[in-house]
Image (cartoon, rainbow, N blue to C red; front, side, top):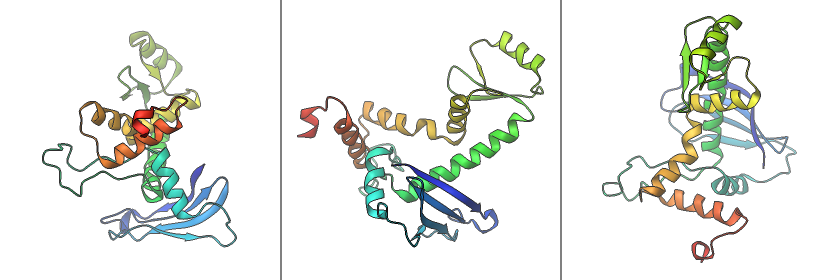
Length: 209
């Protein structure tokens, strides 16, 4: 399932407890829902577009819970974690929040690339250099830091990775695996991991039992 966010308008002056926005949600290339949030702390509103005949909201939420990493618990320590703090399975509201953050990261990245040299370090962090992004300055930086990947003028995959790093999306799935290694899994983590196992070429029969 392909889910995209278009016609996004964010009203920062109205955003208090939540992000105030309006947007169109496209599912598999079709305009499916009008989405909005008033910015007062309430849940997002999704209104089905007349004529849309694709997956319903409940179907989309179920698909996302299996295919997109969950949000982590508020308290990372299972010993002190509240009973209700079980993480959050990805649903359309969470995905829209992530897409808004990614779009904001793309905008910020575009502004920075016009002014500075940006590079992805070996530690998968984005580094900014005050030098103007001229060919000579970029060549000098590559010579000085050959292990870095210059983002200015890079291919789409590098730009996409830089956007994910800037908005924190790069760590979403890895955070689940970290919690798994440290025995700190939430219910949402377990649901997603089981779904990944089911989709694997050779699912683990013991896990799926």
